[in-house]
Image 1 (cartoon, rainbow, N blue to C red):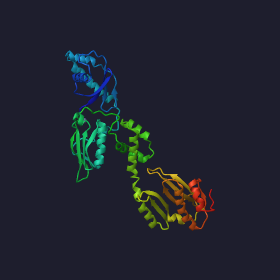
Image 2 (tube, rainbow, N blue to C red):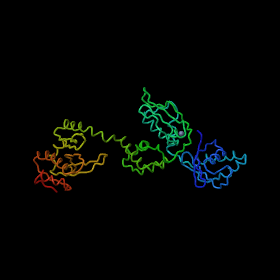
Image 3 (tube, protein in one colour):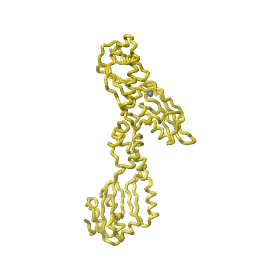
Image 4 (cartoon, rainbow, N blue to C red):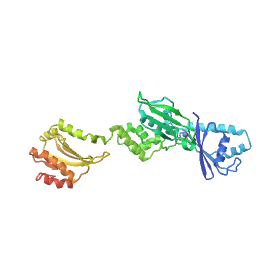
Length: 398
Ligand SMILES: [Zn+2]
């Protein structure tokens, strides 16, 4: 592959960038400089044209100045030393890149898209992901000209402005179900190939794929750790939002969609009643829209066993930290081993008096039939207190 570097040139208060390949001569560079800088000619009195050389990986850069002034004059005079000077400079470009480049974990991404017939067993998801990683490593942005489950066409984002001909077309194989590259024009005719630490191609799905195993092992992995590790090991800067959304996607891959279990609650309530006789289970939804509101469960086995526990009940609520929040209300006793003995529990949207009333009504249905007086322990939540006296008159409460 042809080695390219980006030259950053400053003349007076103006700065430009353009690519230099191994084949570029100093005459080419000089002509580009004169073309891009107004007022600069081949014979020039300019004394400070600084060129910053930056390799394609964006890892190392040579910030030493070299004055193009001398070569500009030499070209004008027709001296033949231009070409040899260029060779020296190009040698220096290559050395600069290799000597100080830190090996990054994304180096192998360059091989992800390489030939027609290449297969992606993970289907369109794997193809899209590897295409993003390839673009990140090679240093360009792409657009989707077609993006469906069975067909993806991507073009270089510089196609409109510079007419770049880079293009890949992949489709789903009917027989095997995998994605296959059908056509690939893997040469950029634009001048925009440079890998930068910030890229539009660094999407949340890429973050998720890189950290899913870490998050599985350490669910409380901090976003700032993700951001720092991407910088240290991949040389990539990402926003806080992309780190957060990438982590959410990884959690989705690990635990599944948190909204889907709600669809199974009706089945779950029926299954409890069928398989655990004596259970008290009630699911309540918002009228008209069938949106989840609250859910009460007390297993038949727990109700039967509680008759042999000491008559103490600890009542409290705690916050649920899932995507949909809510509160978890529970009444627990103590068993003979001094361990917790959960009797009923329920999930509600918030700790209101109405919700406490609903909870205690169900609890009373269980306790009053036992014929024992219980002693309650609670944090004296106002909503709980207002209902407790009416529901269990004369029962001790501390
Ligand atoms: Zn291009």
